[in-house]
Image (tube, rainbow, N blue to C red; front, top):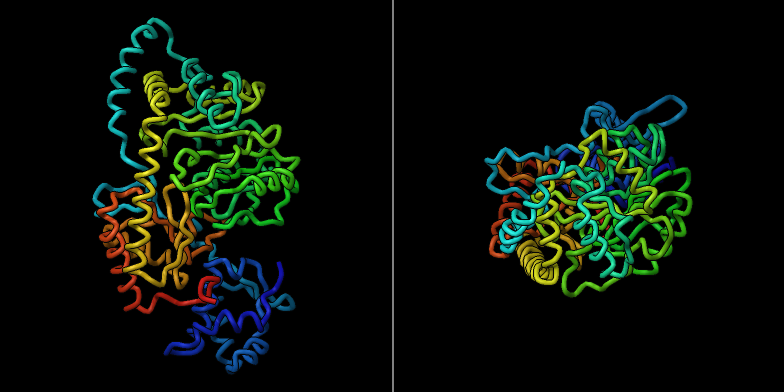
Length: 467
């Protein structure tokens, strides 16, 4: 791991030294914030105490005291002859927030999902009638109901991804499909390329299968251009309205990433593809640009999260292999849910445009409210999806989420979306609440920040937004 130069640290730490209080505490807080934010990656070598003291214009005793604090807290490891290297405390959870609400929260900002559209009740009524002729059968369809497989194939083909029924496996959501792919294509110890940040459950599945996660940095502007497949067997990508950054890859970047990842099985997660906002450009499905690309899809975001229907689109041989693999889990999905999904897909032309307009309005309302209440928070406004990936003026999103739990405000801090527990300067906010609630949401967050300010917990470090 490359070292962190003293000159660069001088620039990064200068804002931390501008406040009051002991200089050693300011240096320690600044370095801790940089580690949590990922700007000082775990393993990076820090300058010697003498060197850093010289460039900061401080005494060596001050820097030594700061390093001692970081060692005691687990943010620094030192060894004779090897210097001091950045670390993250072993006892600190990399993804700290619990995902299950207690039901007593006054504001839950951890879930990016819309209420069901009104027509869902009509679809349920119709599906109940459709169920009658199927009751004489066993009800187990490992590949999915034939009618639903046909509907999904038609849905994908209409988007420019020509698909046959034999290429579709119906799953209990996109994450179920991801789990089946890992079960079928990897063995413990294999390398899997995953975006960082990414949806937490994607990482959780990699860990559960005892695989080695290889991070692919991504932000609102795209994937790291140095991406290489290396020895990775599988690569998970989210080209459409990436969760949480909102990145939407254009055709050129899609082709470039496929060329760079040649040799790995590329899995394109299209969970958010149907919730591009009205002003979002259309780009070709990743699987239409290269052979062997596997597609994950879901009805959770565009239709309703309570309808646990997803799919895998792959070559027929792999589809059969995945169906055999699921036998150790659930045998098949619920028949009634699949019949409802058939009816909802038939209403796509009615439901999806309305959902897209609603999300755009809610996005704009939350962005405006946040700009009013928290003007120092910055965001690249996405043109689709359901979340905003805010950059805070300091590395304190974990502390904000912890404080929020005490006040009944549930937040998902940036480290929850990473492998190593950094991105603590980031906070994901869904814009799935009514537009009329945006002001209350922003005001509640501003109230939490004020409490942290009073406690002196909002260490400010420089960012690309303020440089």
